[in-house]
Length: 560
Ligand SMILES: *[C@@H]1O[C@H](CO)[C@@H](O)[C@H](O)[C@H]1NC(C)=O
Ligand SMILES: *[C@@H]1O[C@H](CO)[C@@H](O)[C@H](O)[C@H]1NC(C)=O
Ligand SMILES: *[C@@H]1O[C@H](CO)[C@@H](O)[C@H](O)[C@H]1NC(C)=O
Ligand SMILES: *[C@@H]1O[C@H](CO)[C@@H](O)[C@H](O)[C@H]1NC(C)=O
Ligand SMILES: *[C@@H]1O[C@H](CO)[C@@H](O)[C@H](O)[C@H]1NC(C)=O
Image 1 (tube, rainbow, N blue to C red):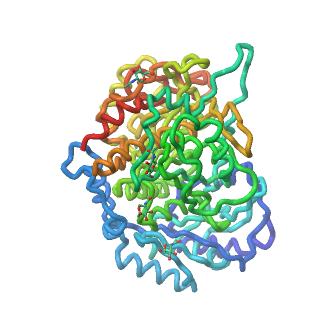
Image 2 (cartoon, helix red, strand yellow; image 1 turned 135 degrees about the vertical axis):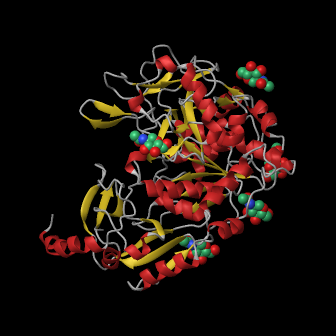
Image 3 (tube, protein in one colour; image 1 turned 60 degrees about the vertical axis):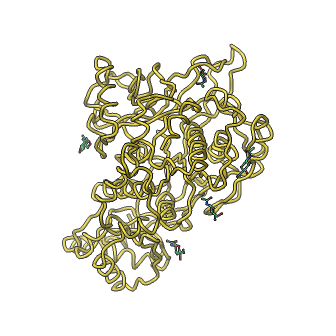
């Protein structure tokens, strides 16, 4: 701790009695080990902070989303435009007035808003930010050449504005580290392993050469937040090596955000190459590193973009997640509302379930629990788990990939659409369930479905690379197939699939290949010995309802 700081800490301690409003009292403010503090930010340096204003009618938004996503409702598919969403959730006049007045009184006038008027993004110096948000203390951190500004201590807001804000973005939450997606091959004695390519996927999921997109206004997107880039030349080479047998595009139609230079990342290449292989010939967009400033949170910036663009792709796949316990409840609740805002517009959001199985959190000496991941645990997204071929040398049926993320949220309660599916599972496997202290049986259970996640071929920096694995592979594979279903729906003049889960759970596994073998990872301790949950007939918290049998899924999802 530097000496200068001490002279300020006493008045700040005193003032924290007056400024008692912590919006994110349960936000983890520890600096992740892989980030190194460079030093305090210069007081004159400009920061960009994001203010999430309290919205109106969130209950009505949730209820309406339920109607428009329920295939048995007369409101099914009656989606809202961005303007209609705005008139529903737009913060009250009072909220706007109070927040603006608070900002103005600190000399902050340089703010941008979004079409729904529920976020403000303001520029101010670090000195002003620390006065505005008592307790905050801005430092610069670096990791692998990436530089960020974050606060090392929790912030508070004035009592007057406390009830008008959900949270302030740009102080906490470091970007998670990308997973190592290359699994080293353990033993190659038995010869060449079957690598997953577009042809293998299309064979397994019964996609014929005719199953490509044809609708004019259909589109799909991948969103990436890991300072990674895809190279157009890699995509072109991937398609020339692996795309021979079906009509496909070899170019992305639109890049939103900043595509940096430098080397391509495996994650970035994987997402794009595979969404364009199952969702073949469908116009594809890439949302990439939307944070333009060191103090922004890229994932949050992407959420703002969705609220600021009236014309968006219908399917988005996102390979991004963080431990629920590292995020504040206020933040997760608000992001969950942002997911509802997308769903009610007919947009499908698919998140990877994560690559650590049930996860593990150390609570104390010899006391562990599983560790759910967010946004995978949000009830308003479709979460995708992972599988492998039973026989790794052949296109056979699928079993659990032991890395497949899954479990029960500690934050979101179980949504109605999945209650009977989860109850069925708990009954079926009752005797073999992990101890109850490891998970929260009343929480939102995930994933919802799955696809192959093991041994993919990817082209990166012009080189074909084998053995790439993770649910970041299975997610775009499912996303592309949902885009093909949307394609047929659009051609028939039907609304898009939107938020899929209520409809998916009503299928009760029809049109999906049920995955019934294998368990995923859990805590390495005496009680569970490295094991989380196990797959079982019907829905399970490892592979959801299973993997898509495309022609059957299309038939099941093509009626009104
Ligand atoms: C939202 O879009 C409008 C233009 O349509 C732009 O003026 C505004 O700055 C954008 N908001 C943010 C936060 O970028
Ligand atoms: C789809 O694939 C499965 C297994 O690969 C096969 O049994 C089935 O007959 C195929 N066709 C259809 C239309 O489901
Ligand atoms: C590919 O999509 C376009 C519309 O974007 C369509 O005109 C074309 O017919 C499609 N190609 C095939 C082979 O279906
Ligand atoms: C839909 O079509 C319109 C008009 O051609 C175009 O401007 C828009 O970008 C398309 N939307 C998407 C999401 O592809
Ligand atoms: C379990 O989940 C519920 C919401 O579904 C939540 O209220 C409760 O706090 C959670 N319990 C634990 C121990 O996290």
